[in-house]
Image (cartoon, rainbow, N blue to C red; front, side, top):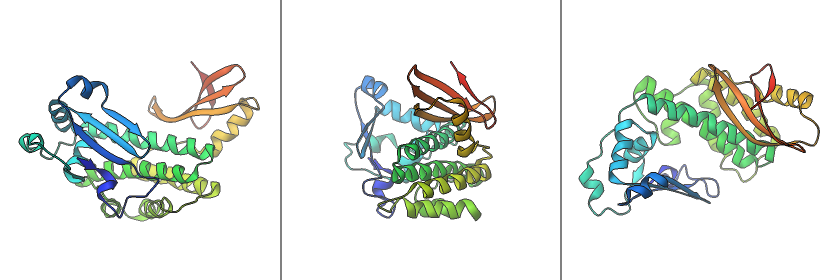
Length: 256
């Protein structure tokens, strides 16, 4: 089954979007050990029939995509025999979409610092889309797949930002000022949509200048919830090796 934007030509962006493909396999070990294999522009998900049934029973977001946003390329009768139905909305659904919102935000900031602004904006788009899909499930019991469906579930500034991100990721070039402007709007939108109070990037950069020695480079950047607070977690690469830091909006401190 192919799923995601590859089945929606109006949402697929050449060079930015992945082609997502589910492959049903007989080997349970392959299903367990290699659930997802990413290649440039291609994301392969392997699942045995039992594993796929488990994804549906537990309410994985992938299951919603397979029901509402997919196309069967080949079926030897296995999929038809499974009779897959709408998955339940569970705490696992909520957890995965929430973590995906923060993960995409962190990836976007990594790309911003690396100077890859088209991919930066694409990650910001995915971050807001994850948050809006979760909100739609919580408020309306629907899982919007296409950009048009997502926009139909929200109004105000989050809708305007999402519409802008849809347009921006289709452009061939983007600049740092646009990425930073959009990030500021995204943090406000996530506060409105998900009640996430995420520290500003400018505050993080100010603390980095104070605390981290010159010549150090940023490695991995993540956004996590620690003790019910949203924090930036980053790896700094310096002459003494990598160090891990946490910024909570007020303090930037090294951590083990």
